[in-house]
Amino acid sequence: MARSYKKKRERNAAGAILPKGLRVLTVRARPGHPSQGLLQAGATVFACALGRGGISADKREGDGATPLASMRILSGYFRGDQFSGGRKTRLAMAPIGPDLGWCEVPDDRNYNRPVKIPYGASHERMRRDDRLYDACLVLDWNLSPRRRGRGSAIFFHLARPGFTPTQGCVAVTARTMARLLPLLSDRTVMRVVR
Image 1 (tube, rainbow, N blue to C red):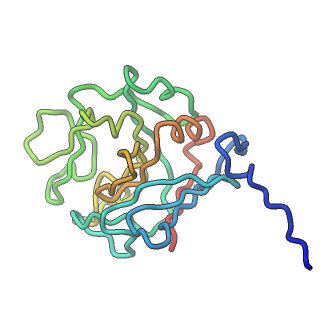
Image 2 (image 1 turned 180 degrees about the vertical axis):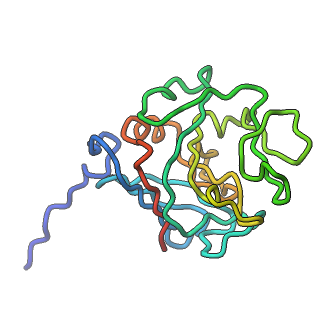
Image 3 (image 1 turned 90 degrees about the vertical axis):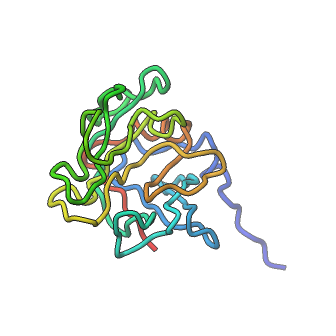
């Protein structure tokens, strides 16, 4: 009888050791669940939520899809009163005030940019009652250059219970975000693959 090799169960355990700095986070859909994903950070894998439209190579405004792309993590926002780990990172992080919004109207001059609320065009409020943006990292999707209708507000943020779908973002638990933040910098790339 052949003997099986010893599996490294501790590798994916909650206490697994992550590298000191992460250059790449790889995200793929969970088999059989296109709006849920697996985020690999070094040798550790975390559950994550994806867009309700799954992963798409042809991202459009309002389709609910997570872009199939490599996106740098540029900076972020946090709620100091709700997420104390927001400053424990090498990323530039700004506190979320009650007047912070994000424009989502393709024809507006501030499309896919932060705006000050009140704002005349449709926008997303960053200080959310559901706390999804208590830690919210900006991915460089459709920022430079901006193309009308190619999608806005693609963030890496906190997930709802049960990893229900996002509007196109990648989302993890607050505990996972707190573990990852100290390891991220503006050189970290999130690769969404199939």
